[in-house]
Length: 275
Length: 155
Image (cartoon, rainbow over all chains, first blue to last red; front, side):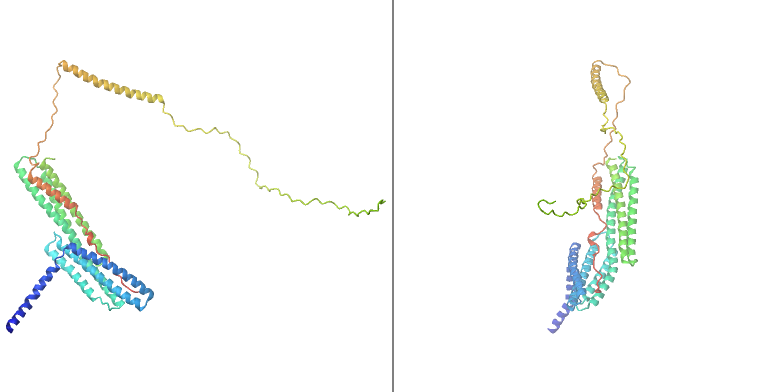
């Protein structure tokens, strides 16, 4: 009897944690980008309120310098720091979801990027736990500086994610135009074989479209290379400039796709006898 | 000799009469600038009203008459040719050298105008264009949040 009981306990102790962990994983992973973004917006509003209270308490403390005003300033600072960390965490979760749901990113690249975002998210979660309500104003000031320094590196990961998402859009559209081009080329081959329509001008258009698609891909590669320079540039204020360069390259890539689409329309006019 | 013994008052000795006090008259002081000579009066012709130059009526009438004449001649010519046409219809006239009839080039419709594969490519391309035009490279909803990082309690 005792042996049976011991076996049951041993079995449950081995199986139960795994099933709970699986359940936990499933419940954490059901949110999509829309709900993550909503969480971020709500937490940012809460932070704004806490920031306003902190500024008032700080001004009162600097004016009065009493023990009571110091206590209030400390409480308001703790609340502000915690809500700030929460805003950063929910924002990173939303960015992570965006990367997860965006098509056109290679699996390896996506996993690497999501891991980097998770590292930053865990750091700010840990920082949140370390903010102590018993700390002095000096302690809280140091806590804030620590988070500020970390956020400079976090921004690199964020711009990496946003640049990758933008570039992925170009990749998806280029693949779609490629499929349309393949169908057009096959149709042209069939019509040429039938000999019942003059399609001698179509080859020139097809060659132009190929050229546009190649140049669009080059621009995407250029955008990807620019994104990686985020981790080389140390200054935080240079990161926005690099991100803007990435977006400019992606925009040029999309414009080349527009040209390719325009040339495809010319081919269709030849097929339908409009030209 | 005093007849009635009325003493005659002693008259004061005649004193020179002082003229009554009068206010001194102050004559206005004129400026010392020399008088300005009067400007010579130059006769000026009365102001003439600026009139807009009138377009001579005669020229307007002539132009209108010419236009009307041209219109009348054109109408007459139009009816005259129509009448002549009617006359020539009655009297058969030998035509001159044969004039070639205008050849209207008929472009044959493409046999692939309504080809289902071509139409599918067309529809796919339209859907692609709509997607491309609706694409925004910048994620406006995910701009980095503006946060207060500067925390200090220095006065």
